[in-house]
Length: 328
Image 1 (cartoon, rainbow, N blue to C red):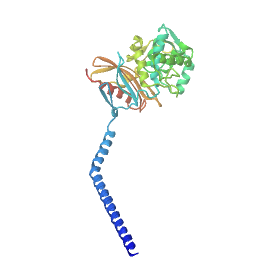
Image 2: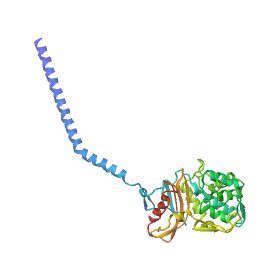
Image 3: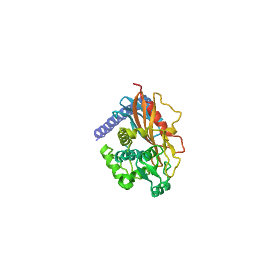
Image 4: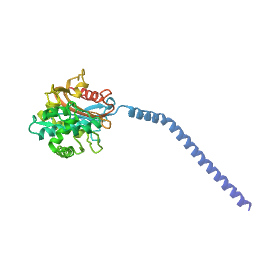
C-alpha cells in the first residue's frame, strides 16, 4: 500500500516536471516571436508608408511610350490621337459613357454636308424651332424666326457659335423632323464603328438616352475632318453672313473656342480648329485640332467642371495635352 502511494506521488511529480518543461518551452517561443516581430515591424511600417506615398502620387498613364499626369487635367475623360493614321497618344476614361453636349453638332454638320447637294440653297427657319431652344436656354447663332438662310450659313452657324436653330433647321430639311434625323445620326454612328453612342437630337441638348464616349467622338471627328468643307468650317475663326430678310446688313459670328484661347500659344505648334460644348450634365467639352511638331493631332475632352461663366478649363486641358507631345 505504501509502495503504491509512493509510486503515485512519483508519477505526479514527474508529470509536473514535464508540464513545467513544456510551459518553459512555450514561454521561450513566445518571447522569441515577440522579438522577431519587434525586429521586422519597422520594415513593415516603412513598406506601408511607402505604399501610402505611392497612392498619393498623381495617376500616370503610359501609352505608346508617352506618359500623362492626370493631376494636371480638369476633364473627366479625354483622348488625343494623330489625325493621319489614328494613332492614339494619350487616353483616359476613353470608353466611359458621357454626354457629348454640342459636340453632337459635328455629326449634324457632316451629315448635312453629305446629304444636301446645293449648299447655296435657302432654308426658311420655322418659328416653332425657336420655342424649345428659348425654353432650354440653348446656344444660338443669332438667326431669327422666319429668316431665309443659306445652307452654308447654317453649317457655319451650327459649328462656330454652336447655334441650335441651325442644327434643327438642317435636320428638318434633310429628314422632315429632328427625331427622324436622329435615326440617320445613329445609322451613321454604326457605320463609323461608334458602338457606344446613341443620339436623340441634332443639338446635344441633354437627354439621358443621348450619349457617347470620347473614343467614339474621336472616330467621328477624324472622319469629319476628311471632308474638305467640314475641315474648312472647323478651322474658321469668324464668319460673316450676307444680308438676309431679317438681317439687312448681315452679321458676323465667331468660333467659341478661338475666342477662349486668345493670347495662348503651344510650345511647338498651334491649335487650328475646334468645337466647344456645354450642358450642366456634360460639363465643359471640347473637340480640337492642332498642328504640333509639323503633324496634325485631334483631341476630345469632356466633363470638365465649370460653365460659360468660369475659366475655360476645357481649353486649358487641350493646351496641356498638346504641350505634352514629345518633339520627334
